[in-house]
Image (cartoon, rainbow, N blue to C red; front, side, top):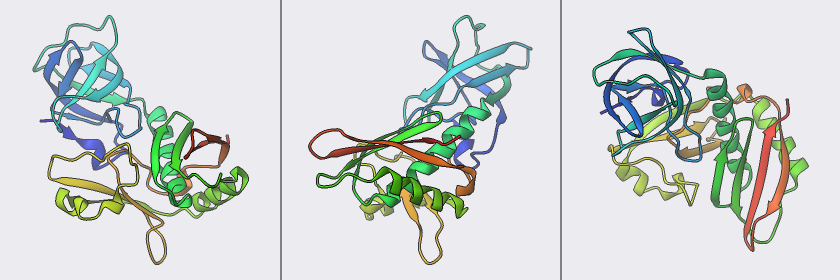
Length: 240
């Protein structure tokens, strides 16, 4: 069982770890700060500094077998890895932080566009959400203005946990129709963008987020696309 340190503190950049399994996909450890691909967010990259002095490049992170498995994908040419070897895991923090900023920004976008989310993708410096909205197309200038106003408000972003049963009893907490939050461990994490009298946004999410919206920085809605009879895709990117 791997301890997911990123779920409790997304700002952790490294951790000591012991290799617990190795196969053709990569290696697993007893604990990790690396987020695996899922929920529209890419997996982390970085490196493993073995106690023996070898440095293992990690090109991607993916989900392993079961709800508590995470596989670090080692770069080609890496030294042979062995169960029991210890070292320090270090993520590519600059890239992770950009992904965190964009992921939180997409939560704000979902709060501004009150339609079901049919898909989405967190990218490095850009992102998108697809909405089930047949009769209207959002104005990108208006959306850009409203997004930046929420960002500039520097609202706190917090996390808390509920049980799997609580989530099943409150389906409105799942905004994305195509991606389900991670379940199976008995509890599910909620991400809240804190408002004055009520949350600006509240939804189940297993991804990594920043602590305040002001960290996102200025963004722009690059384009709004018609992706079918009902789907509208809103693409955003960092302004600088």
